[in-house]
Image (cartoon, rainbow, N blue to C red):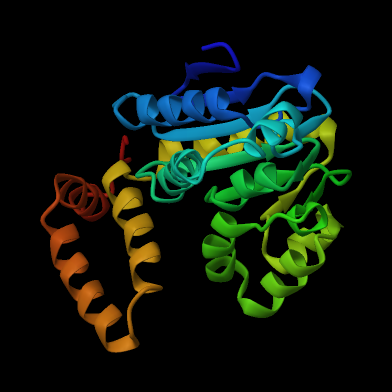
Length: 257
């Protein structure tokens, strides 16, 4: 992989954007490498948690300048294909069966903020800024809008997407865009400790089913979501992890996940 690095340690797969000289800007090759890396982690039974981070002072500044220039000469069909590739990446991360944590130690803007938005959990340094600046260059934050409305609600989504304004980490935390604000010198330890708690204290199948449940119930009416939850509940009870966990609990034994 040319534009990212991928490594696994203690059941955590770390995917790192590696274009610091270009502020980790997105372009088709990088998007493909990210997709392939998340697919690799999905199919690796030794991986329980995925960590997405970046080299350099910027997490991701959005689309690459040369890429933006290329878009001006693309045909409609080429733009459809290109947009579908980014859609597939966002949806892959959003619906990934494993926990995806973003470690944001610099600004995440436009498509870079889109990457953050589809992760399950987000840690950020106080200095990080977040925003969807597409409207400021005559573009639209089309793909991220689908996820952001679900995450923040319509009012906050309106505020962020229609203004294109950047917000700081504390405001992003209060809006629910991110989960934790951590000082830079403590970031690695905090994220690794959190990841290891998931690795050591949770069932892979239960986490995967719970993620699926959270995503699915948002698409259903209350009655439909309850019926879906009943079905998932019954399914979960039949899994080996559930049988193992209940047996260990009843016998007061330590569970090894």
